[in-house]
Length: 63
Image (cartoon, rainbow, N blue to C red; front, side):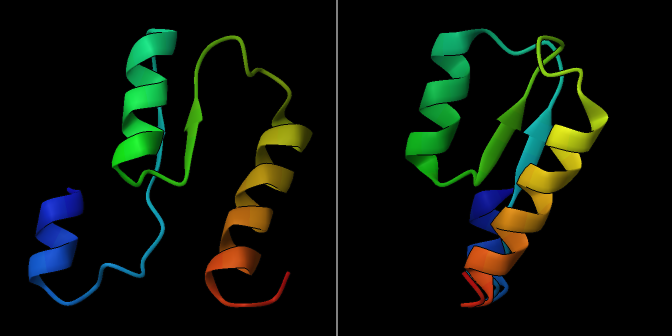
């Protein structure tokens, strides 16, 4: 996904992933450029939505 966005000239679009992702894989994804990783341990919808808003704000220079 990240390579495809970069190839399309859209590397500034933040990517957020979620699912059953081991911690080590989550860290690796962030190191590769994923903006946020959510797993089943992140079950608070309000916190997740707040995190997504923060990613969008940061990506658009609104932080």
